[in-house]
Image 1: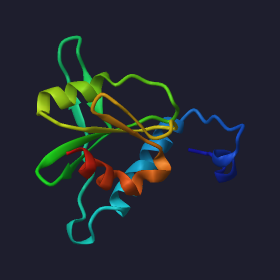
Image 2 (image 1 turned 180 degrees about the horizontal axis):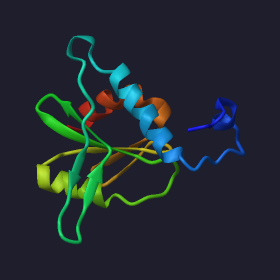
Image 3 (image 1 turned 180 degrees about the vertical axis):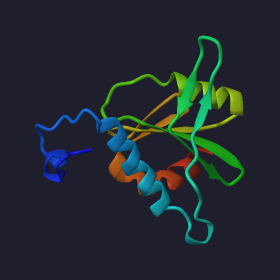
Image 4 (image 1 turned 30 degrees about the vertical axis):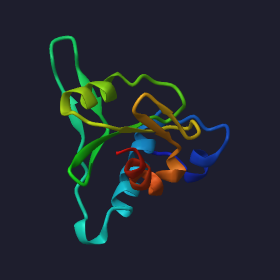
Length: 127
């Protein structure tokens, strides 16, 4: 992307592709923290419907449940796609990785990206 690594961690940096960088970071961390004996591919979900498209960045399996994961590079953003996924797939909990601190809105857990290694434990506490 032509970005100097030191620019990414700079407080003044606001790269145009920060959303893509956040998604790549989360994807790599999901692979890194998956069980060694069950390394999985990364999956996403996308629904195309008339005037009602929806997309979730990652979908992981936890026991027999599908858990959607939405990645936000900042603190803002809506959760419409996450709610759509949970409603259509009968999900109990979703994960939103963003720069906000730990929290919960409805059945969506908010987790800062640095704590991605704790996602499975957090899901377990909610299911």
